[in-house]
Figure 1 (cartoon, rainbow, N blue to C red):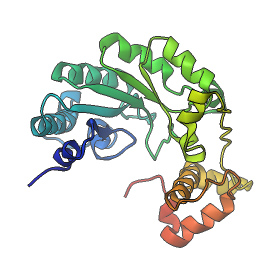
Figure 2: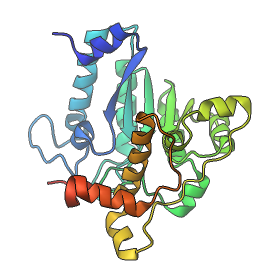
Figure 3: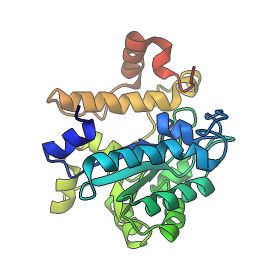
Figure 4: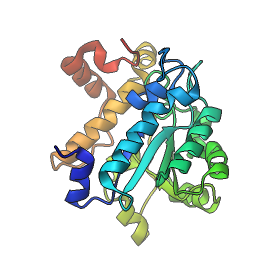
Length: 257
């Protein structure tokens, strides 16, 4: 039976990425907060990173040395007792030893969504994880990608010129300006203003918070998928009601069962 990775190679893709960030399965194994196992998969960092390393080894064996395999990794979980920067750097070192082709850095998870709800001062700076990039660069020379907060072309160019990273990851702006890359190339790009998505009711915004914002951007991508234009003026209330109608309170939950 062919694996998804083998299918990607056959389909003509240049590589695949292992998602080991944002609180998904591999990220949970890495986190001492979530991983409470007492066998060879839990406890020490060596054990907690085993699931990621064996996943990488299996993928590499399936696709060969000439196919790119990268990883998306948290700089930190930004959660008490969670995966932190010092552990992240050690994982980067180990992945480098094993032959990883590129590393994308993000941070946080849906319980502590740094990638969705950074402080205003950090949002203004744009590059959420640039400080960590310098630490990762010190131990690894494979292509390094930083994702989170980039909005203006100047901020992207400044980050690249710092030498701490090789590529800039862009997410939310693409949901509002799908041809952003073309606009940058032809000099017509105007910085996307991505204000916090809020209803204006403090209690609702505190409870819904980052998940409401994520659902707002997912709705934009859904519009694009239907062949429609994104709607920068889309009402937060409309998204909130749609989320509750389709998924109930679970659609706004950041916790884990």
